[in-house]
Figure 1 (cartoon, rainbow, N blue to C red):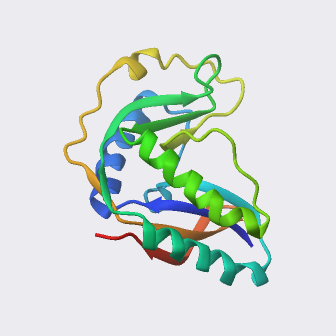
Figure 2: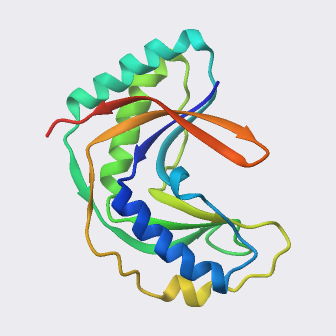
Amino acid sequence: MRLFIAIPLTSEVRTELMAVVGDLCRVIPMAKWVKAENLHLTLKFLGAVSQEQVPEIIKALNEVGRQEHAFDCFLTRFGTFPAHGQPRVLYVATDQQLRLSALVRTLEGKLAPLGFASGGRFMSHITLARFHKGNPLDLKPLLASPINFHAPFAINGISFIDSQLGPQGAFYTELHRAAFLT
């Protein structure tokens, strides 16, 4: 199984992001855009995991859920990976970098005894598109433009997701959701 842990997005946030993507598709046609149903905020990619490890991971996620409180998050700006040079990924950032980084550290602390190493530096973001190498892109105007997302969205839990790769791209199945305290 190829698994990761993420913040699920509400249908309202996905709809708003897809409206932005629809506008961007016209000015950046060479991108591979993320499908609406695949939009999420990744906290930790686990990679290949055996079926036997799944119950222990779920237990760890539930422990995190029992100690975290729900909070609101705003989408703030566009960004790229890498930040300089030829972009490979276009994303939208959040205003909760510190809070989400702390959540990732808590999550990694619960997963470390199960053999999952720390992922290093975390950047809170939602991937919108990926670019092929060699496409000359000038995204500076986009990166300098303000984002007009209207309302915050609630972060009230984390999802444990199975990612299956196929000819049509990735297909995600939520295996478990651990709710936060309200």
